[in-house]
Length: 253
Ligand SMILES: Nc1ncnc2c1ncn2[C@@H]1O[C@H](COP(=O)(O)OP(=O)(O)OP(=O)(O)O)[C@@H](O)[C@H]1O
Ligand SMILES: [Mg+2]
Image 1 (tube, rainbow, N blue to C red):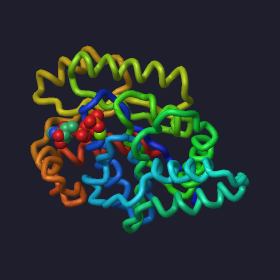
Image 2: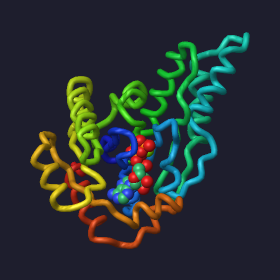
Image 3: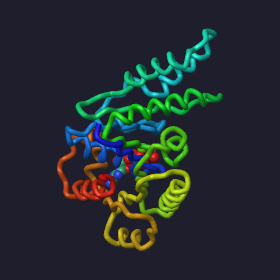
Image 4: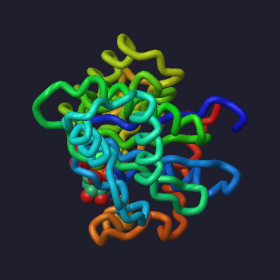
């Protein structure tokens, strides 16, 4: 491993294209066999595995629940044993496909305080991230879950939004909160699903955030998503090349 991994988190309002953009970023980096890429689905609704063409076997949340069951038993548990077991289990939750690995966080916890377990998990995710060159995190809508679990390790925050006032307001809030709470190397906004030039001009006129790219509504992308097809099979397209170029200049150090 040459240097600290690039850890990219995608945030934004619901349905703006976080998962689609996460899949495209993952695909872009995984195209270079020299790079080890980890994609993390941090959305409890889980969806990133589909555009990546990956089948999920076990989620981190399932591992966490198994561990809580174990902790609930009477026998005393030693932290070292627990860590070793978690380390092992966590790797069993990784789905690997060539130079791409995938991890799904799964559904959020129920009642009760499992701070100790969450802390252990965070340490483990941090350990795992260190073994990759690029980590892409597809977040749930808003900041809450990612914030708690892994946000302190993120180097690049990519805020995704559509052109709606609601989407832009959420984007601005995330940008502001992120700036106050986290020490990113970079954060910026990606406008997605923009329909035409006039919409693009209006958006750019109102935008006060660092701009990464304006991505147009793309029929092929929508069809692939609807059919649950892997984005690795997408045909080449100038629009996708444009997105890649913009993302590279945002992400690559
Ligand atoms: N550039 C695009 N062109 C056309 N359709 C798109 C584009 N980006 C995303 N979509 C479509 O928009 C819908 C929402 O996309 P996606 O699931 O990626 O959003 P999301 O932000 O991850 O949603 P959620 O908040 O529910 O997780 C999907 O049907 C997807 O195919
Ligand atoms: Mg999503």
